[in-house]
Amino acid sequence: MTVKFYFNDMSPPSRSVMMVIRELGVPCEVKDVDMMTRQQKTPEFLRINPRGRVPALVDGDLQISESQAIACYLCNKFAKGAKTSLYPTGPGPREMVDMWLYRSVWINDLVEAYLNTHRILFDNETMNYDALHELKEGLHIFDKWLRNSLYLTGNNVTIADYFNAVAILHLDQSGRKVYNEFPRLKEWISRMRSISLFDEINQPGSDKLTKIIQDTLAKRTE
Image 1 (cartoon, rainbow, N blue to C red):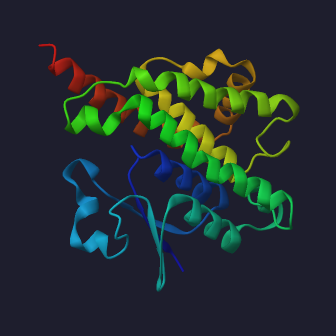
Image 2 (image 1 turned 90 degrees about the vertical axis):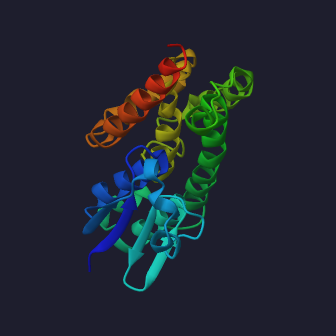
């Protein structure tokens, strides 16, 4: 059965799940949700996700929102053979992936607090430079953690790496690659971007959002 995936390429969580879908070869019908016209707040979409946020997934009678939950569900259902390493089974390895998967919410919040995307677009604000110090403290934790492994939970890439890398690379929107100030983190980002699907899935939406932000800020100086 083909799943329906409600997606917007400017949404980092949407792109993280899309990486899982593509890596696992999940049969999927992609439903593009136009966030700029607030399609995610329509009654039709709110019946799928009452929070009015992308992404969301429908598989038969099952409706799932929250990007991490969607990714875990897809791995549990569709990962076979070597692909099970994306979300390993068994006590210990899986809990480490879960830990870093949940931490991706934290790092995404730090990134968003700094970028201030929503308030730039809708509240006539600018980037929140006061949030930069706390963001750097968070990135330092990543850098220190990566001293003993290639990826966040060992030497195999997992969905936790997907979610955290996409969140951190969202910083490119600012025009300043803050993560490059942390050598191990910079190397990890480079390894993630060497994954064949990574830039293909992430770059178009990231570039689109960056242009919208830059155009919005430029209009205020005219």
